[in-house]
Amino acid sequence: MMQAKIIICLKEIMLKFTFVLILFFVGSALRAQNKNNCIFNENSLDSLELEAIEKKFKKISLNGNKYREQILIALKYYPELRETRIVFRNKKIKTTMACRPNFFSFFKPHKKRLYIIIISNKENRKEKGVLLKEVPFNAQIGVIGHELAHVADYGSKNMGELIKFGIDYLSKDKKRIIEHKTDSITIAHGLGWQLYDFSKFIITESKASVSYKNYKKDIYYSHNEILDIMKKMPSLYKTLR
Ligand SMILES: [Zn+2]
Image 1: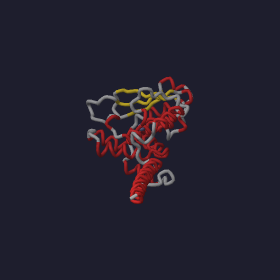
Image 2: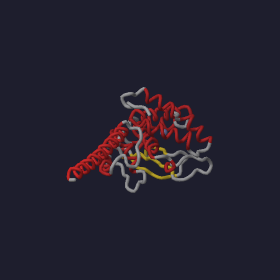
Image 3: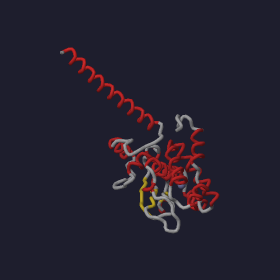
Image 4: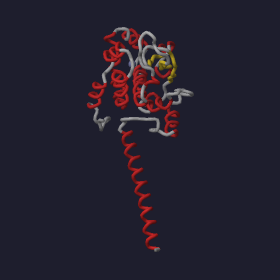
């Protein structure tokens, strides 16, 4: 009788142990997936990890920003922006997001500049685009990463080059070159999958108008082109989905 009880007890312990072991391996697999930078979700980073990133980027105020988590994850990939002043503003613009230096910053060196990243918060009545709130979590990190790539790129420019950039941006052909370069910077920083998800979402899943999708296809890399660039960076993208 006693022996039977011990055996049952042992079986229960073994069962619980196996269950804990399975949880551990599933957790490790998910963490490994994140290490390969494939997909982030709301639970990928805990509050302590997010606070640690926020402390490192102390010149970027994210108080009350509803995209704080996505922004912090993207910032993790841009350690060179630790001393950069960036503010996020909500405004009605044609695209999902945009980035520019503050007007007075044109006359200052990179370290003293203030960069403004705008998040579109209202529908454009003339043409249906895509608001950030409509974009899936991982893809939101991708488009935020693209704007941070603009900041990183502005950082290498002096006043004259910034003015030239502003003029170049008015030409469609030069704008395409600039945006392709910005996409490449994003991918080279490790946010290729996130940018891939953003590009794919806009073209294949979003409710954006046909002309908006055509504009996106024309100016930015397609998700297949992003994947091709990632394939050329095997050390950064060890596993492809
Ligand atoms: Zn851009």
